Length: 94
Image (cartoon, rainbow, N blue to C red; front, side):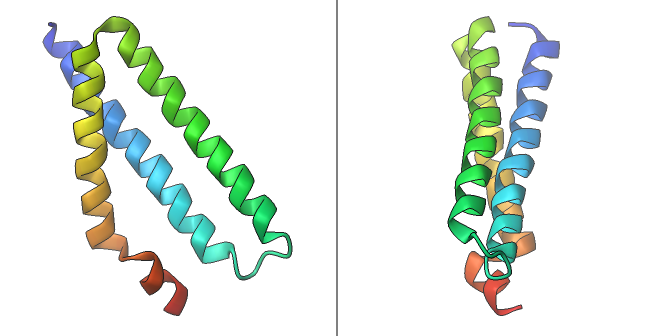
């Protein structure tokens, strides 16, 4: 295992988490204002999951441990974003 790849796996997991959960947070904030809310939810979900799976698959091609590191950093950044941005219920009432 190479230290550079370990760092890349951790940073990519963090970036994916910001993209995924940040996009979800923005979608929830805009859903009440959008005329076709179901389409907004569907497109947002497909884009976020596609990007997530592509990056995780690319990491898996090198070694399964890199995927594990990315997943751990993904979940840690999720908790940090939850503390910073609040819950979806907070977003609806602000």
